[in-house]
Amino acid sequence: MRRRRSILKFLMERRSIRIFRPSRMRNEIAEMIVKAGVRAPTYLQSYTIIQVKDEGLRKAVADLCEGQDELVKNAAAIFLICADLYRTSRMLDLLGHNHVLRTDKHPIESIFAVFDSALLVENMMIAAEALGYGSTILDYPLVYPREFAELFQLPRGVTPLILLCIGEKGEFPPLRPRLPLHIVFQTDKYEDVSDEELDEYLETLERAMEREGYVRKYVGLDIKYLEYLRLKTVLDDHSKKINDAIEKYLKENLLKF
Image (tube, rainbow, N blue to C red; front, side, top):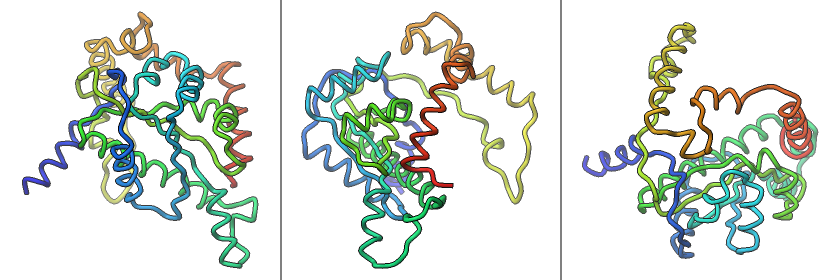
């Protein structure tokens, strides 16, 4: 029972760490974290993990992560997580049958490649936490997939998804709000939520992030959190251009619906 409580404590108290003390992780520790990651449930293990160790590559990655470059530079370990249908297709070729990855439509395999990658990352983050490290994920590989593909020499069918950054904790932020359980956890059928409930959650989120000074601390902007959220999700000419480029890349490499 004590061990169960310990595991639940890690899960219930985990928070993203975005400020690291500069350090580098020993090879055996990185390997231990990856070993824990690959024990996650999986369909076809359609992912590849690339650890970024070369200092020149680290700098190139940091340059692509505008606004989070210090986080990347100080991380003890950086892992590029890729959905990998290229290797899965080659593996299925060896079975000698006409498999689904030879077609332009394989929605199950596409979705599970992302799902498998997410389960892998969660296991790696919990393993890092158990070893005393903090962690966070960055979406730059998905925003700039062609740049990351070129930098890491990814073949077609290998899609960069996220950077998992693990490091020595340089901060101890509070737990951040989550949607109330009754909104996300339902029984027997889907229950819609009222605008009032969603608005109440947004107000709770705004107050918590303001107390923490979240936007000033991590983004360097003197604005409210909900305004920052609007900036992150606004639909304008710039975001349309980025989304169109991402959609094109994903259709070429991963999403075959």
